[in-house]
Each structure stands twice: as C-alpha cells, then as structure tokens.
Image (cartoon, rainbow, N blue to C red; front, side, top):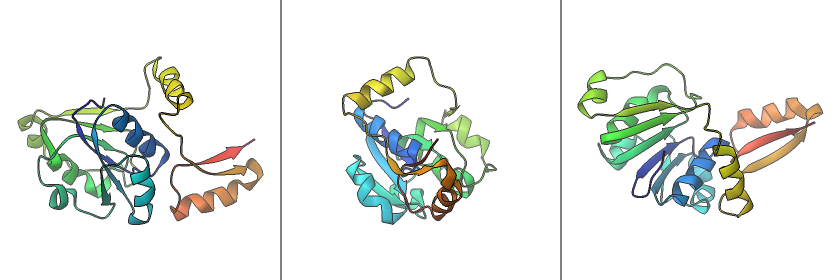
Length: 174
C-alpha cells in the first residue's frame, strides 16, 4: 500500500494497472517514478508521474541503489534484480504481473538483510472497488481506455495489443 512520503517506482506504468497505480500513489502523496517506453512519457507525466524512466533503463544506474521505498512491479523478468537493488532497507515490493517473464533471480540476502516485504496482489479487500469508483466519480482518478473494439473485432484488438503503442487498456464491447 502506497503512503504519503513514499518514493514509488512503477514498472509497466503505461498499462491499465500501471496507470491506475501512478494516479493512486500520487493521490496518496507519494513521489512517483513511472517506468514506460519513452514514447509514452508525456502521457505518464500527465497522470502525475514526478520522474520518468524508459523501460530499457537500468533503474540502479539512473536512480541509485536503495533509492525507493516501494516498487510496484507489473513486468518482472530480467529487470527484477535491479528493482530489488533500488529498494531501501525496510522497502516493499508488490506485484500483480509478469509480462516481462515470470522467472526471476533473487539473492535472498537482499530480502533478509534489507528487511524487505514482498506482496503478490490479485484479490482485493471488499472496500477497494467502491473506493476506486468513488475516486473516479470525484474526478480524482481517470481510467485510461485507449481504444474500444466490438467483440467481433477481437483479432484486430489483439493485433493492437501486441504493438504495445497504447496507454491504458483496450476494451472489448459485447
């Protein structure tokens, strides 16, 4: 859970979950570092990101070791060790995605010597959805819908999805 004063690094920030995380963390008073392809940086800044990293950047080289309090990782894959290196002592790591690959490498000493907390997230508390809807209705959070497609155009939607040039979600309409 993001808190005021956190420095948060969000990977996959241009996706639907990532763009929501950027907005929710800003709403809570965190400093947000969004990691997405450079072509999407203007949109990430528009959502409130304080700092932008290209998805190919090495976060340790750019931000420094032990520079963030929370990583919201929606990518995983080869970049995972660098994300862990960026966490400060007592830092937190949360994930609900692995589009970069589900298998990662962890030096367990980082976990216990830095007193890190790891959280996987797929199910939410019952109050989460009503809270989120109230934020949307109040204009505090904007769902990012890039395009809608009729269900009959699911093949076209998949082609657009694979191009990875959009921000937010693609929506199929029944």
